[in-house]
Structure formats: structure tokens, C-alpha cells
Length: 252
Image 1 (cartoon, rainbow, N blue to C red):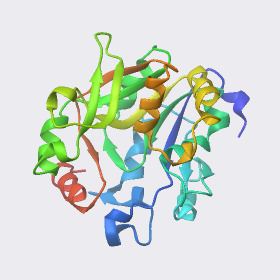
Image 2: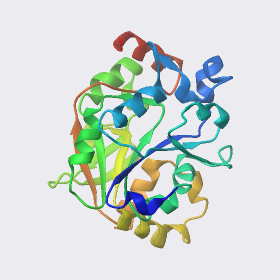
Image 3: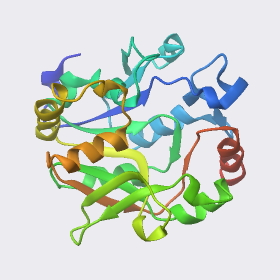
Image 4: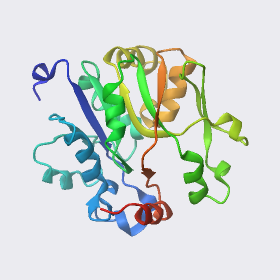
């Protein structure tokens, strides 16, 4: 990849290394992001969101069944060779060279959302990290769980709409002001600061998830994490029940 030719651009990075074992037979022979909702694979919709907005350089971090991503001829691929033993942040670290030089929009591959989400992040001029929060999170979690608080975690912001806590267990909706969607934007200086403060000091950093990373950033005051609200359709596909709920709501 010729990084010099993409200076001053925002580079999308799609995290698609995981297997999705909770999806049962749906992911036995294919990556989780290849599960279809309607006529499209999840990965097709994520790519479409970026391509419709004119993004030319897109990177996919692969792992499980990585050979199946070769069908995307125009997309750059980076394989997380340790995908079996690392978590999603371990996949993101594989894109260190890009993250250190360019603003990047990071997206999970096993979620459904509209291109409006990318528009919001693309438009934002805020430095640090900008994450999206799903406005209709409470209604959605009530569809997914008999007791939503059995799964929901804290998400608190301050008066400047900056994230101050995420990812802890709670028994009160008062501690939940939004829901992280799996899509965010990061400035290269913030990535460099993450490397400086965390890479040498936190054991097994590549085995944590992104919300745990955000909480470490907050605790150590590495950079600001800004929150933007997103109102259109969003689904995360963690298991068969999530899959069935999304299929009922998405038609294309």
C-alpha cells in the first residue's frame, strides 16, 4: 500500500477477523460478516456505506476464513494471524502503520447500520476519538433481552458530551446515556498516545475489547472521547436471536 498517496484522507478500517462462534452453523463455513440479512451480506452493507460516500481506500482486517475475503478485489486486506488468541483490539493493532499516519474510521464488520453513521463521523472536526451512540438503544435491548440490564453496561457522558465511563455492570438505567455502536473515528495523534501510554504498560492488551480500551483511555486521560448520536437503523449480530430480530426489521 502506498500510504503517501493517501495523505489528508480518512481511511476506513473494517474489523472482520472474528469467527462468531455463537452464530452456530451460520458461521461454520464462512466469516461472521458473510451472514446475510435479506439479500446482502453484513460486510457488503458496511462496504456499501463507505463506497457510496466516495471512499476509495478501504482496509479489511481478516482472520477466520480469510481466503473468502479475496472476492473483494479492490479492497486492501491485512490478516490478523493471531485472530484465534486475540480480541478485536488485537485486530486493530494490525493496522498500526495506517492508524499512526491518518485519521481512520473504524467499523466492526458484524453490525448493520446506514451510511448516515459514516456521514456523521466524516463531518466531525473533533480531535481525539469520536464514537457513535445509538439513540434508540433501550427499545432495541428490550427486544433482545427479557431483562435488558442483564446485558447493558454503563455509558455516561459529561456536559460537553464526552464519554466519562463505559463498560461496567450496572443495575440502573441512570448510568446508561447511550450505547456504543462499534463505529468510531480516531485521530493519528490519539493513536500514538494510546501506544505511548498503554502498549508497554498493559499486559495482554491485544486481548481486550474496544470498550475496555475506551475505559483505559478515560482512566489515564490519554485523549478525549466525543460522543455523537445516531438515530437510524442499527443492529449488532451477536447470536441467532439477534440475527432473527434484524431479519424482521431489514428488507432490501
